[in-house]
Length: 122
Length: 108
Image 1: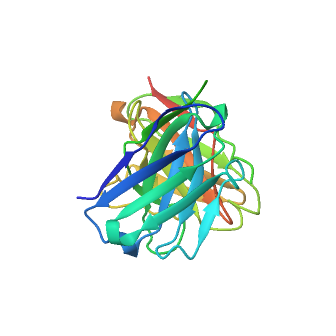
Image 2 (image 1 turned 90 degrees about the vertical axis):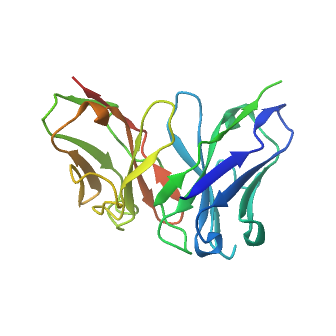
């Protein structure tokens, strides 16, 4: 069974940093691209970033470009999101999601983790 | 990339069929087959229902179907059931991924 478990969320002050992690199991991690998608309280889904199997292709939403960095460690079956210069509008539930297709980035996310909550507030 | 446009809400009675639209541009929905649909129940993670415009992942009911015409994609749910009540999001991918604003489906 594919499992994605996010961690690292919490309460952080504006301007500070936070690093999210996603532990993957149940599939060959380095055969798939991975993504971070967030959902602000009561709002819709927003794609944050995606990374191909070998980190050779990376994409970011304009709203986080230059502040967030996605990375992966295939030896540890883990996905990361380094979030710097956090803003109140970054407050959201952050989901880790596996790309269904394979090694390249698409918008076919299956499955999703349960999410980790990030709250940016003073 | 701008968000895709979906109706805020749709409703239908059990057994009926409903269709949710998702409007983009020729640069996203209209230009590529990277259209997908997600179902999200309250407090739960989203679930992929349709990918590549009209394909269903294994395990998704054949009551769910997808299509596209021009710059508008559609999700149709036939034989509505109470468990279909949820939020539905469309998505497109070109140089980045974009979601629609979401549609709340109410089963009357």
